[in-house]
Length: 114
Length: 111
Image (tube, rainbow over all chains, first blue to last red; front, side, top):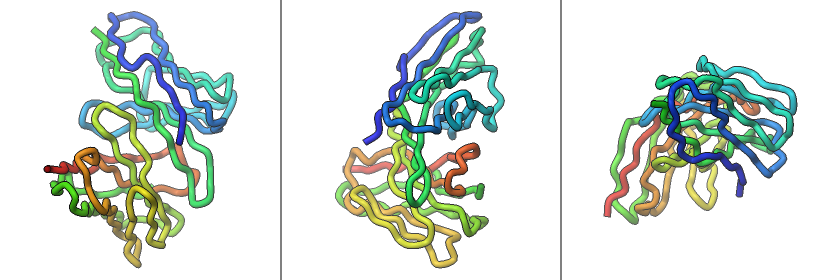
């Protein structure tokens, strides 16, 4: 069973505020990901990381930034939140095993920017 | 990564088998088929994956056609808790930078 945690689960914040969404995993996985998902829509990859000090942007353009200073921690930051950032943000991690990677997801952070 | 096509929704009676189809006609030889599900307001949950052989685990069975252009996820005895959106994903092993989920199939298990 995978252990990956996201906080907060829900966040309502005003426009212009700086926010950080936390994601931690206790499995020692090298690879971590951030996805954005609007209600009823598919997931879109916005950031990923191969390991410590390695981050890349995903297919979906995002104004957020990420960092990977420790293996277990992959926070996502929005310097100035806007209503267009309202969405669900999902964090995931994976470790290779025979037959291919399996991604394990956190429960998500539902962000509302007023 | 190959794109997938799934029906937007399906109904299944509780206790019966749920068979969820997925078309992936452009799949490449080195691409795996993965299935995930997402219950409302939670993160996606891994179910099963395979390359070309049929696979079974404690949650489900995966049937991949011989030409690998389509697959079927089978939940042998669906329960109300299996109501969720089921995603079929095709990608190269270890290729995590393009993990296209698509819109999935909403499975409604009814009593």
